[in-house]
Amino acid sequence: MKRLTAIAVVVLGVGAAGVARADCALGDPPAVPEGASATEAQMTETSGAVKKFMAETQEYLSCLEFEGKGKPGGAWTKKYNDAVEQMEKLASDFNKQLRAFKSK
Image (cartoon, rainbow, N blue to C red; front, side, top):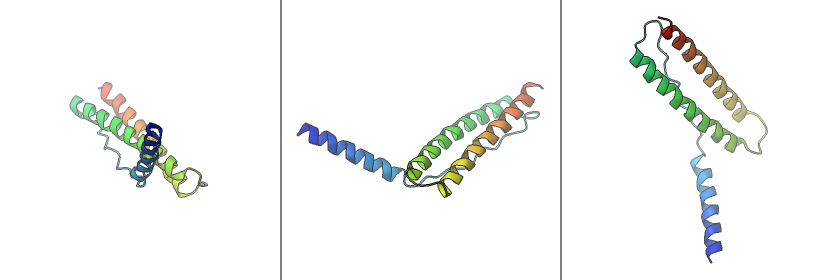
């Protein structure tokens, strides 16, 4: 009986995970201030926002992988690649402005 209950819990958990992932959505990246004129507080806040966005994007990528599993490329692959490019651009922009901030 315990084994049957454990199997039911696993099956229900997997089913719920599929339902929870049914809607892959990603918000907008945070704005990056000009490092040459930004305050330390602005850069610190932006750093936190960038880290949060990166984590959210990783979750989004996992969702897309789950949704696209067993399907050939196409729409989900484009969304995945676009999200990766967005992460790379945000990281590059933030690092550029951080260097400008540190050089003043």
